[in-house]
Image (tube, rainbow, N blue to C red; front, side, top):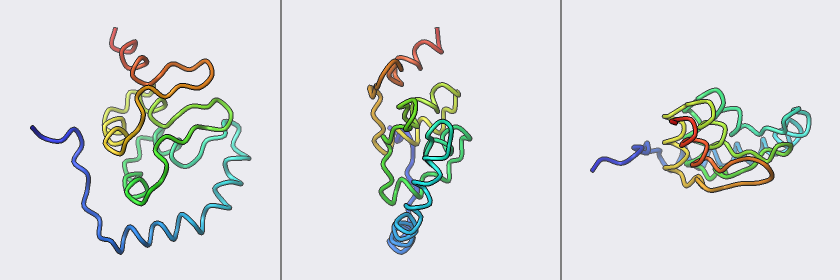
Length: 117
């Protein structure tokens, strides 16, 4: 059986470079999150825009289950709600929690079921 999402193969050099970049960008990311009206981090924006380049960041250790600061929404919840199937597959392949729930939001799995009713 084929993998749900075929993870790309990145060189160790690519991953290490991206990890260093993430560390350097962390202060700017915090500032962006704090100024964003939804409290979205880069992972949330990539999920909303269906930008599959997110995979290199995920391969480098970006937290796939990070919640937005304001609404406490995961990237998977946003991708499911937007109907971005490839993004949903990518996030699940990197360990996104299908049952994650904070506050009044539905877990991503239940949102997906509702969308298909």
